[in-house]
View 1 (cartoon, one colour):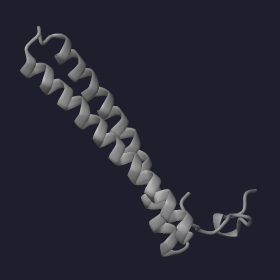
View 2 (cartoon, rainbow, N blue to C red):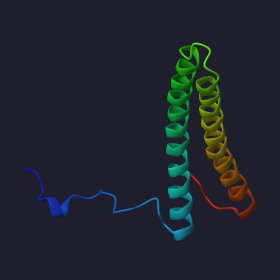
View 3 (spheres, helix red, strand yellow):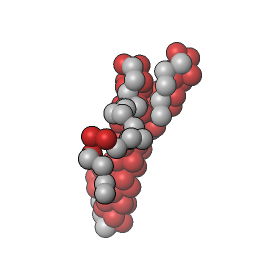
Length: 101
């Protein structure tokens, strides 16, 4: 016969990985930046492919070629900004000892 649920022993109590506000902020920031890097990489790839296709189908029109080169450059700058934010977060983590998971 099974004991009632209230008498079952060995069940761990409620716990969380956010034991302090520093851990919460570090974990939240780390996860947001990881998702931002993935989204930025995908966005860069899509924008770069579209700009390359525009450049290939420009038929020598200098305006379209210049616009596609500008789009490629802007996509690259955006990707570099997101990556630099991640690395800046890593430097802040090291300097201040914030716990990122």
